[in-house]
Image 1 (cartoon, helix red, strand yellow):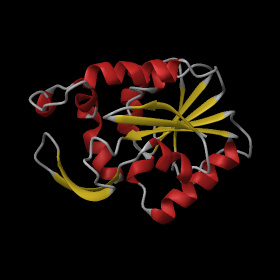
Image 2 (image 1 turned 90 degrees about the vertical axis):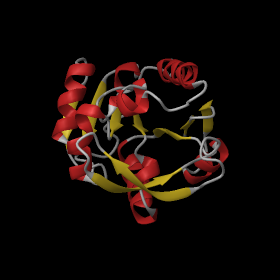
Image 3 (image 1 turned 135 degrees about the vertical axis):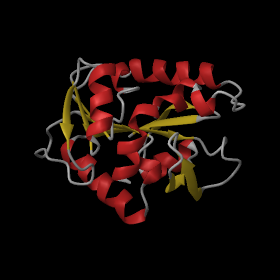
Length: 196
């Protein structure tokens, strides 16, 4: 996965922005929903937040408070530094967070949790709970997936390279249950966000 995200970094935001190979995709309501998700993130109380697998910083820049973005990909971090220069950035593994217990007030992660298989999900949740009492997870909605809960997807990058990527989709209640309880702060056709 590390090599995939290193290579995808320069084109990652095309997915959010609906440009490039995403331009012709039919995504009804995408823009309005993305705006709603941004609003839900901006409405969170300001906290010292660790954004795990921050990627290009596309959502990082909307987090209120003092933000530390973490990613395993230097290429993603380079993009994030340009997009959200107000945050601090750390190159590290999301499943072995290089911070002491209780170092943050919140862990935030977007479109990362849904790529983790069973053992890694357990490991991530243990690490997230170790470093912060609050966790906010943003991911893809099961409504959009048409009932599919999980699958292996072939992803083709602009350079033609092909990658197999594990992906899960969530309902708000299903995600809250996995996180040990919580509330949906956003629930839509494309995105779901749960605060636990």
